[in-house]
Image 1 (cartoon, rainbow, N blue to C red):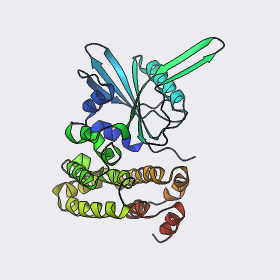
Image 2: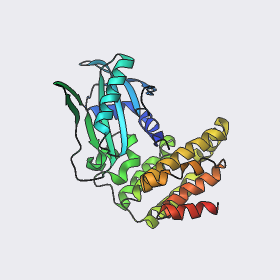
Image 3: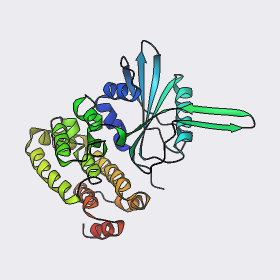
Image 4: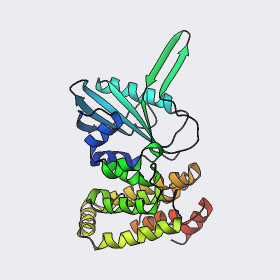
Length: 287
């Protein structure tokens, strides 16, 4: 079974973790400590990101960030499990946050898990943030750079001028510039695909001419091509799930066999241009 694509979450939050945690908790005097490896051995997947935090009012606690591409009905039960496991493992109270990226339906998303069995009750509250309800100005005017790749699907973010402005902001930071492709995929949900490709071609020319591009290439060589290949495979996995859902993820075993970074980049570009999984299969045969 293909593992879900959670690869960018820790990277996104780690760009400016304190600003992110202040935003998701709405606790203004919060200070953050380390970003913890949140893998739990007792369940089939890991919670996205755990951040140690402190505040004068609440003392030391954990902020559990769970990002979902699309909300799933089993999420309340998962949030209960993740919060309980985090508290047990680190012996700290936990503030769970569920961030949903793409709107799946008009149904209201619950803010708590509740169950009753044989007269015994269980309840777990958690904060829900639906990105399509978040005003784009929060990403553009406040210092929350981790929101920039999501600009196209934020409230009011689906305009060409807004997307171009966000791309310029991404380019202005070496770390953020690596997330332009992520933004491009989200842009395809609100803008014409041809227009998105035009924007990205213009953007990549500028990026290649910048001194940051050469620095990134040098760092990539030092860190080894293996790490770059694994990162690209994970990015492809995320792109497949965003565009095609479970059907797209069925291609991952075949894609994982590719060991050439340029071929993998071509596959990622191909995902943006094709309309369905069958077309992508044919595209991959030509690589």
